[in-house]
Amino acid sequence: MDDITIKEHIAAMAEERATRLQNEVIHVREFNAEVTRRLDQRIDYEAKLNNERDKRYAERFAAQEAATLYQRQVTNEFREQLRDQAERFISRTEALARAQANADKIDSLATRIDRTEGRSGGLDAGWKILIAVVGLIATIAGLIALLRH
Image (cartoon, rainbow, N blue to C red; front, side, top):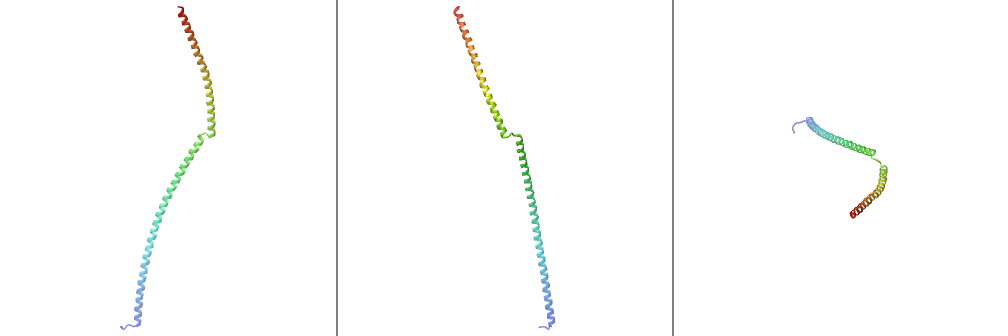
């Protein structure tokens, strides 16, 4: 070996070890920086995804709220129409009572018409008989007058 003393050899080994440790520290720092950069990228990506997800959720929620509001409006309009119908239309019992009253009136009028037809039928028959009798008398008078001449 060269004439290196133990002290120099230990100093060289210590320097080499310090350089190796310094290189490892640099490597660990670079690795740590890369891991930190990747984690930051991942955090930014997740934050972006969450923001997009929140935005879509807000849009869906707003659409659902609008649909619910529209459904309530339609339902309220329908209820209002039913309420108006209930106020305007007569009840079933009242309708049945009116129908029965109309049926009674119709029966009464039918009876009157039957009586009137009976009377007018009798008068019609009377006029026919009267005309026939007058016609018969005129014919007999005409025959007698014709025979006397």
